Length: 305
Image (cartoon, rainbow, N blue to C red):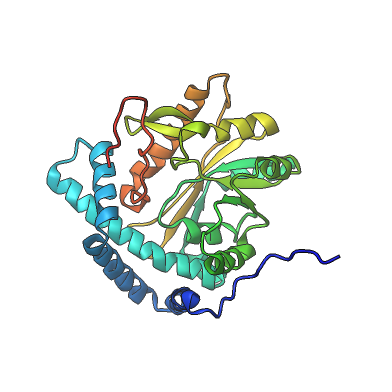
């Protein structure tokens, strides 16, 4: 009896050539001199601000909602800084994916290591509360110089880029878990692993409750509290950013959340959002404001986008 074998993508097909070019460009970018990376990233960000009208509109809307106290000029400046930071973030991602992070150890300031070290000494798993900063992948690579972790991610839609991304992240994550695989997350944490999870995106009404984020009711996933309840593991926030000198990075573990989760889903989601908001306010331009954080609205509200 023959067994049906799924067709494997033919990565030599012309439709994948642009992806191969992007992968080659990332490898080249990873080896550029540091100053040139910053310059190229800035140009990429400014070009995206000019050409990517839809993303610019989303970013402008998010920042107007979240920072109403800023003047129009200050908001325009923050939009520009956000695109520049995310352009540099592409260069940082290339560096994290295509080079050994050891060459950047001298650029890292890592605070709060004792919080994670204590959990490891006790043999306890943990849920690492992450944030979608533009420095996300480089931050993960730098984090691997000190601690190991698993990661929860959404697979990329393009199979060639998904394979490249998976291989690039493999050296600094022990396991990469599909975001729909709740059992896998629970199993890894219960076996003593730390799992990196970033719950700061809008995944829709069915898996969320509405909780304030920068004063706006935002659809916030319930999974953070659910995982903590199912595993009994501490939730430990991890924040990271590029410093003002544009040459060094700060990673910081905050103390594990106390008395979390509670019996109130909205209160738990509100607490998680508050932790993430506080981290973003340190360097708001480095957050991924380009995604539609407020696309799901309470009944009767229209989309701000």
